[in-house]
Amino acid sequence: MNCDTVRKLIPLYFYGEVTPDEEDQVDQHLHECAACAAQLEQQSALAGALDQRKLEIPLALLDECRDDLMAAIAGGAPRQVKPAKGPWALFLDAMSATFTGFGRLRQPVGAVLLILLGFAVARFTGSGPSPSPVLSDNVYPMVRDVKADNDGTVRIRFDETSHHEVAGRLEDPNIQRLILAGSRDEDAAVRVESVGLLKNRVDSPEVRDSLLNALAGDPNDGVRLKALEALKPLAGDAQVTKTLSQVLLTDANPAVRMQVIDLMVTRRDDSVVGVLQNLMQREDNNGVRLKASKVLKDWNASIGTF
Amino acid sequence: MSPQVDTLIRAAQRGDQDAFEQLVRTYDQSVLRLAMNLLRSPEDARDVYQEAFLRVYRNLHAFRFDCSFHTWLYRIVTNICLDQLRKRKVRKEETAVVETSEGAIDRMEQYEEEAAAADPERSMWNRELKQRIENALVGLTPRERMVFELRHYQGLRLRNIGEMLGTTEEAAKNCLFRATQKMRGELGDFV
Image (cartoon, rainbow over all chains, first blue to last red; front, top):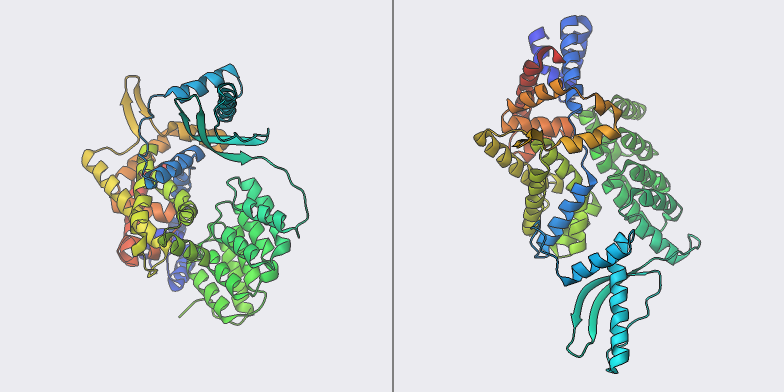
């Protein structure tokens, strides 16, 4: 290969988009030609400079997007100017202002007070509304609708969220249900902890599915690595191997891909050979490439597909 | 396609809202990142997000599993982003910089400053280099910009990128080559 050809290939070579033959020839040329090697360094420096431009997504923006989308799907008008505050909102604001520091609790506190108000009105007027529920301290009501009848009765529809703490052993089905719910929680730390605990229960199909879901779809690297660790006893299972293959070819984290290889190669399997050969065509990371090529060599399989 | 995503799609096609929401959450961070990185405007990125997933919602029944869901979704997202980039080219508006009574401000600054606080290297951000990079990116066609974005920032293979953009791997290779050449030309001795 001459310098012109190599320089045309350098961007593609840098991004791992050349054929194995081209890669060998460029490698050889770069060893012998300092000018072309400098071109590759310049390409690398350009990529480094562009990396600084990469933006992390602000979580608040992601949350807003999700809320807007779900509101639009539910038939609401997304991202409209917030309507002027009604009497209910003003009342809650007043409550919040009264109880400084209770900002996050203004809805529950307001709702509880309204319920108490309704209860008191009913008691004094002697009319017979449905009895109001007794709300304990750990219940956080989310009020959906409030109506005041002409007779002084206040009707409130609300959902409630309760805060509880339970303790039990992993064998307890209720504990398992909660851990499974934790594995899908918004909070990555809760997911890491929950997925880590699931590793002792992989014999349950529900747990296995949950781990595969976490491995294939969780945005957090720690959760995916925990899921991989938990799936170790299932190495060789067809369903697990299928998901591992997909993760190996799509996961953005080289550490995850390395561990996936470890898990996939516990025994020789022709389908795994194909996946590793496919990986060799697209893998950018040298460590992952080395690991995959070593396995293929150990298994006397060719490095590429032909 | 992973069996889990497959299951979610089929459930969402049957009208299961929770499944649709889970499906969105599986892919929405990368969609938003793509839109933010390309358009450098939180408002525009939000519009792309909303339009893309609403199109997915309305057309999911027509998804026949003849390509990966990721590819199908990205066809939608890249089309919307390309439209936005083309409109900007026509309007000669490129960056997120807007004129205010207090002078020009960059609407992305707040996000970059937040990132800088979290990452000390970002605090060393060289404004001139940043400006040169922006100039270099302005010089790309929307398609070159998209191919470069998908390969460099999103780490997708050119074969997949070609599939998403309705073109060949070879054409995507040419786009990537032209994009990097233009940027190296613009940045010159800066890198």
